[in-house]
Length: 258
Image 1 (tube, rainbow, N blue to C red):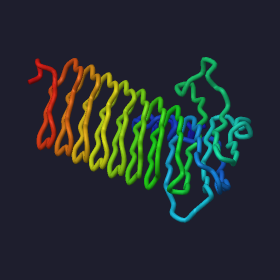
Image 2: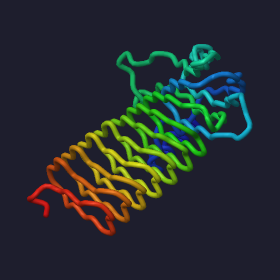
Image 3: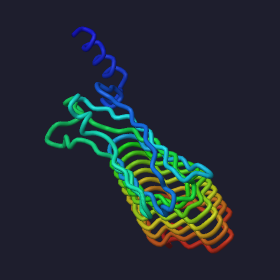
Image 4: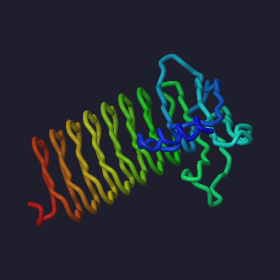
């Protein structure tokens, strides 16, 4: 009992979240045949998600760590998979949204690590936790919370995000931010076009864009464009400064920002 109280005190004093302590856990190690698959749908739940593209591969290597606060929840936690033209990897976690919360010491999450064929199209839906992708192809992401980092991707990239920072680098295709509620959006070395359709709050900063950079609607936060190969346009903007340097094409910003 004394050891348990000491551990709780250490967690509180260090500012760690409840998810940093794992009462019960199990590891997952699976493979999924993706020969002939054109798209991989990943439905992730709470927990971190990392996806890495791998050359000359037609399988997905799946590794995960389940962490729960109740031992009986281990059997309810795991992964479902299916192959085919549209393959799927689905995280299964117990439904603990019944009035209990992290502060009540109840939790269930699955940290997921995937190695996938670098050319397969990814469709990712994630509820909470950070996302990291590297060396992947075309990506569509819908994310509720947590930071997102995508690097060395052939693209195109399409993102819907509720909260958390978005960082993009070395994208060899177009980037579309369909919607972003909060958090900064930072991109560099984007070979194609950049389109931000709707952003509520947070700064937007892109540098070394090969083609056009367009912000259709921004509510608040600064916007920065640096070294753009095409046009730079901000169609609607609420509050925040707009800065443009080294734009080869036309620059179009609201009159009150000029």
